[in-house]
Length: 264
Image (cartoon, rainbow, N blue to C red; front, side, top):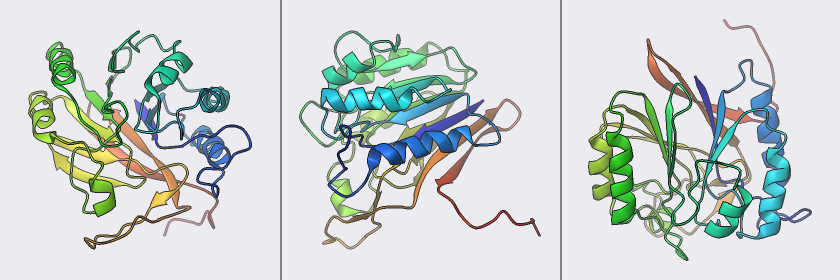
């Protein structure tokens, strides 16, 4: 099974730019085209939050218009820039989404089990999973301890070292870690939010964060660093699973580059 992951497209109403500088809608359309052009078409597309920028209904209308170009079934989770009820209404055809409450869901129709966890406290930009969400996750994981599983949440439950991002990470990570550690069949924990790729061994598995299709948040590790980002490089992640070898994850850059050349 080949799983594509895109994140943080920050889609805007038609004709509007993200932060006044980036054509996030065009960039997301290019990301979809990029996945279609791969030599192996992904089986599913996961989008790990901040699908839109301000949670506006017209932004979700544009998101659905752009996603209509995807030949891959897609699965979505909200980020801190999303509006839960507008999100739910826009994706009401996604039968795994609950009709009310946090947007936790599980899909067991593929070779890899897919679980989406809503890490967004209402009105806040940091992440946190409350006691009910942890109990829901523990129950879902307990239903199958064998099938390979991918867990998605928007906010990474780790300290990245980038000070202006760590203020908005997923807090109370120890409680979540204990639940995840109880399920040794979790192949990956997939996150967005930080607009760049990071890897960490966490809770007995591997945690990956996905770059944004729009902007890259700068890697600045000084304690007093001020928030800063650039347009590009952009990309997504590809997670390839098979029964013989487990899961391997690849960073796939979006754009046109010199080549191809012979491999030598």
